[in-house]
Amino acid sequence: MLYNITRDKSSKDQLIVPESFMKGTAISKKSHINLKVAGRIAKIELIKSKELENKQILLSENIFDQLMIPEDIPYQILAEKDYLRIGPVIGLLMTSTKSRMSKSTLAKLMSYTLIYPEIGGLLVAFSTDCINLEEKTVQGYYYDSNFKGRGLPCIAGTFPLPEVIFSRTILSEDTMNMLKEETNNHIFNSNFFNKWEFWNKVKKNKRAEKYLPDTKLYSDFKDIEEMLDKYGAVYLKPLNGTLSRGLFKVIKLEEGYGLKHKQGEDMLSFSTSEEAAKYINEEVIRKYRYIIQQAINPLRVKGRHMDFRVIMQKNETLDWQCTGIIALIGSRGDICSNWGSTAYFEDILYDQFDFTQQQIFKLKREIVGACKLVCEALESPEENYGDLGFDVVVDEEFKIWVLEANKRHYHTVPLWINDVQTFYQTKANPIKYATAQVGFHVYS
Image (cartoon, rainbow, N blue to C red; front, top):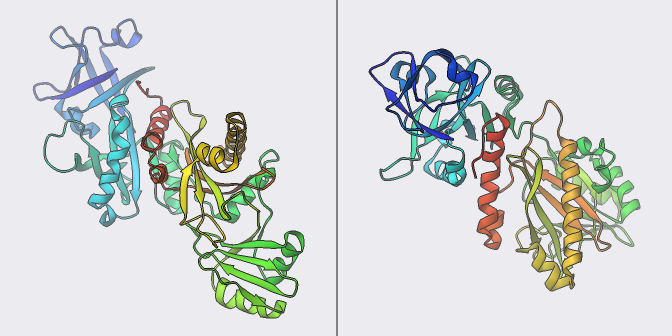
């Protein structure tokens, strides 16, 4: 149930509730109790009133100020042992600095509020530099569901440090560890990992490792030569690159080596390993760190590379679910699928590969199963993930390969195929997961 909690200026240290409040529970028989909001606690007197309607509650003004919550937005109230919890208090850690909390950033908050009528509570967007761990507070903007003015319904203020945080920015190790401690590890996605760290984490899981392409950390050109002897072609990928920036393909030719950048048709040729090594070290690697990865021969659409973005998320069930799969088709002559066209997973397989519905279902089940295994391989008691975007390739023999996981993947990818429903679900699931993590309900 969602309650309307209003500030009461005529009382002190009181929570005034309707007679039906928590009826039949041990809480309803208590006259004094602790009231908890995130990490803040106030001792209150519980008063019952015949004049209040079922969902109407009054809270003394001094307790409102002590708990640092806004009034007149809907909240859930849970009874737990000898205290009542008001919430949920959900944090969206959007940027590293307050200066980057622009109108466009706050506008992004709005897409997370689509699920708000089903959960209520305090939904706060904030930046890393506005966290006060000593005071256990954040400065930010909360979503006011009753806002009647012009502009965005985002109201500035100081609020309790959220009890659960969805992080959309990179945090220092110290900040992350402190937030893990303060939230009882209810911060997701918790730990940043690069491509090499991802590969090593998943490699330790025997059930998941079969979906990984062979990968090495680049140290010198001999590493490339060894991989080329095995596979004939490899990719060079920067450890922290996104959107295929800095991506190169190295091919073993009959005489020498070929090197192709993501964009453009031309391939550079080198007749000796010394020439290739010099160019790669000076023009490609330079000061950056790279991995070498086995090149997969993917399914192609009219000669163009195709891979899939698989959105894996947790929701109120606290389990991994597949929110959607989008096909990405590269431009002609490119060595990967980025910057090309997009399509529905089912449509592309049906139209271009003559798959039956049964074959489509089977492949989808296998892809989702592989990604779920990889999700589980990434998790540990110390880490908390709930929103990942996987780059998946299906090769010419229909073997599934999971190339990498994106921790801050673009939630707008479903809109590239005009799939508004999946976009809404992609935005709603992290909020559902956040709500359920800390014991509150999603009312559908």
